[in-house]
Image (cartoon, rainbow, N blue to C red; front, side, top):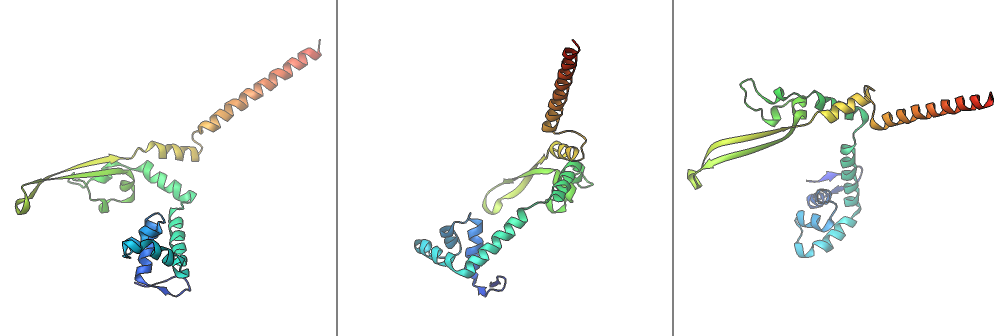
Length: 190
C-alpha cells in the first residue's frame, strides 16, 4: 500500500509498515523494523537507514501530528464528555428483554456509563466435543460524581477547594483589616 505524504512522492508498503510500527512501538526504530518484516539480525542497521529517509521522516511526522491532534480535547469536548458521563444511566446497557446489549449497540450515553466489561465463557468437553455451556458477564459502571463535580464547578454551582480556601482567607484578611482600623481609630481618639 503506497501512501502519498503531502506533496512528497509515495513511500513503499514496507516503509509505511515501518512508520506505523514506529509510532505503535513507542518510537523504537529497531522494533519497528522487525515489526515491518525486516530481518531481526540486521534490524538495527535497517532501522537507521529507513528512519533517515526524508519521505519516512515526513510520514512519521504526519502520523505523530495526527496522533497529537486526536489526543487534543478542547474545553467544549471535555464538558460534553463530562455531561455524557454525568447523565449515564445503567438502564441504557440492557435490551427490553433484560439481556445486556453488545458494546456496538450502546448509544453514547450508555457507553459513557460503562467503565468495564468482563466476559467469561464456560466450555465443557475437549477438542471436537468442546461446547459452550455458559457465559458470565461482569459490568463495571463509571462513578459519575467526578463528572458531576466538574460540571457543577464549571457552572459555578459549587466552589473548588482552592476557591473556597481563597474566599475564607480573603474574609479573614478583611476582618483583620477592619479590626486594625477599629484599633487605630480607638488609639487616635485617646
